[in-house]
Every structure is written in structure tokens, then in C-alpha cells.
Length: 208
View 1 (cartoon, rainbow, N blue to C red):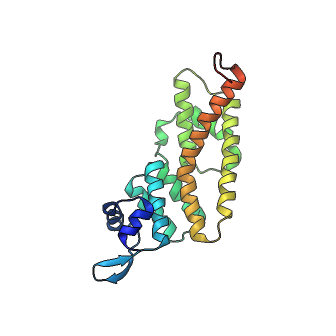
View 2 (cartoon, rainbow, N blue to C red):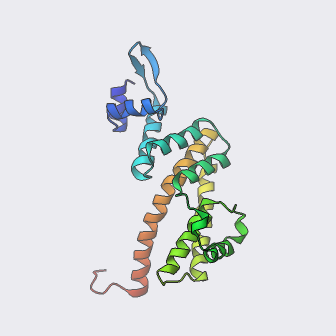
View 3 (cartoon, rainbow, N blue to C red):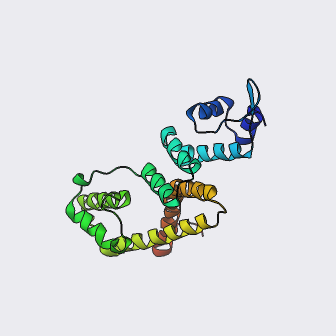
């Protein structure tokens, strides 16, 4: 298909597609004439991927390029996970964290064999530290429940990856699942909080 048809299929404007091509986010089409190229379903899929990562995942163009390169290079899945996680994770300075907060998190994830510079470990410690600074504390049962929920979601992520038929589509699922999975989990948590609060405390005046 020509670029105009590609635009119609994906909802991305022609200037946007040309921008993706210039930035190396989208592979070049097959040349059909000196100034024309044709595009296929792989381009449609890649544009949908790019838009999902930017519009829903909130990634910058530079970050999208980094994770799509991980897909195209057919890196081992562990490397793809590492790149995807480092891309979506805010970098936390370990020196900015309280030792007590780090120790608390390490106690919760003791069996996970995380590296000391693991972005999730550091981010979790910062959450615990700031939660305590607000005067709320951070009970061990609350943290344990979050850790167990995270493990369930992590296993679901890997189960989804293993349903894919080849390394490229598995790597793509790793990237999409890591980025959009964060948004999905946060959204479902909001709905779950609403449902659980109604079950526990009721909703006076609300029509059932």
C-alpha cells in the first residue's frame, strides 16, 4: 500500500508517518519508484505499536526508538526486559534513600534475587521512604500484599510472552506488556479500590 493508504489504515497522518520514518522508528518501505514506496502489514503493526507506546505508555520518541531497536535486533528476552524496564522506570539515586527503607523493601523481596541497583527495588524503597515521611507508616502486611500481587502479575506477563510464536513477537510482547502493563495495572487498581470500598463500607444513597 502507498503511504496514503497506510495513513488510512492506522489513523496516523502522512506527516506523522514521515516523521516516524525520519526518526528510524518505522522501517523504510519497499521502493516502487524513485519517489514512491509501498508498505505492508508490518508497517501497520509498527505504527500501532509506536502510538500505543507514546499515547498510552507516555514514552518519548527517543525511548520508543530504544525499545523498538531491542525488538528489531532480536535480543535475548532477558535483555529485552531489561531495556523495557529501564526505559519506563525513573532512575532513582541510591544515595537519596534511607537505609531503613531499603532494608524494608529487601525484607519483602528477599527471595527475588534482585541486584542492588535494580530499578524496581530502588523505586519501591523511595515509595516506602516517602510514605513514612507523610506519617502514614508502611505496614509489613501492606507491603507483602503488594509484593504478592506483583508476583502474580509478573507470572501473567511471562505466560503471555510464551504464547507468542517467535522471538520477534515475544520481544514485542515484552516491550508492550512492560509499558502498557503499568498503565493497565494502575487502571484496574482504581476500579478494584472502588469495588472493594463499596463492598466493605457501602455506598449510602447510591442506587444498586
